[in-house]
Length: 46
Image (cartoon, rainbow, N blue to C red):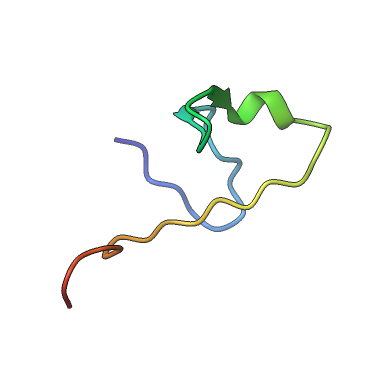
């Protein structure tokens, strides 16, 4: 597992979009700004 620190470039990854399409972070390099947000307790009690 790679530990990221503030200011480091995010590694490339692939995810399914809300439309079930595969997208990669590298698809947006130099084209758009990307905001990646994590919700570790989303849809869980607490």
